[in-house]
Length: 362
Ligand code: TXA
Ligand code: MG
Image (tube, rainbow, N blue to C red; front, side, top):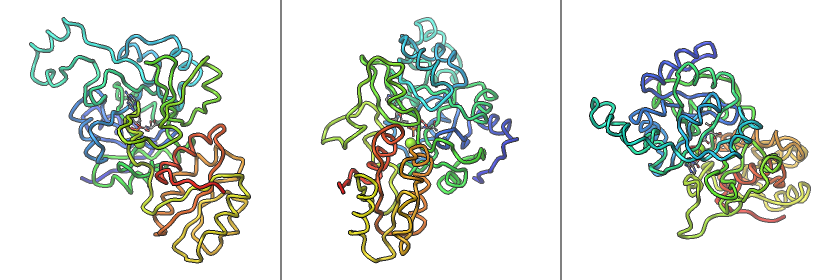
């Protein structure tokens, strides 16, 4: 299959492919997603194939408007509406209960044509989207082209990040093409992603609500809206044998470049000094650092995360930096690590996972 690179004025083509059961790379404000019609089980199955994604890792649905929640979800708590009002459209995903089909709907489907029977299941959303869970992740993205594609397709769009499973998420159309060329119908080039890390995921099916994945909406801002929010253990540490995270995807090695990563925590000047003291003079050791320290590592492949205090820039550049390290062919990566305030929580989470939680204190 030849993967077409679509330009921003080809929204209708992208939407048409989705309507017809194909796969399209879609730009979002967080990262590029691999989109398909979320109501078409065959199309959704092909997402898993293209990514090499484990079948037990559910997908999230992208909708153009909060009013769509009521079509696909039930028992929606009042907090969900408050969060939607404040953060949608934007980089927030909410886990909610799937809407169940009524008995008469099920009967009707059973007697209907074979094609509608393939949708047969207890929930309106096909089981292949949710990996058989009775909950679903719902997201209303802010990227204008993404919204236009979903609106033109007229269906909820199932879309994981557009990377090969386990790799850093793509933040440019080219990065997505690097992973998906020949495996999907098209990618719509909507420019560089402005947030750079994936959406924040909050589970609203439990009390208190629980942060499953830090992302584009900082925890501090969620706390403005929610009286209480719990952090899932998978956010800040690696899971122990037999421990199961609430977001199935959090158990997999992730965001990982080819070379092993050592994350160095601590105040920026100290972590930079630690790396300087430990990096060998080999050209095959790469460094990801804050701008202020880039000149310390001139003899090495270096990727900058932005100024040490600019959390939004760190998020925007992180995956690009990890991919650039891959391209340079380094055998080991050292990375300076920001604090956990604001966007830092998401950046530290992704870096820690890229490093398999190999973290040292400067
Ligand atoms: O920013 C984003 O969220 C991007 C863009 C494309 O929208 N999408 C994205 O999707 O990051 P993905 O599939 O790469 O990550 C979604 C995460 C996975 O870890 C998955 O396990 C979790 O959400 N998830 C999906 N449905 C869930 C559910 N019902 N309960 C708990 N976790 C769920
Ligand atoms: Mg992903």
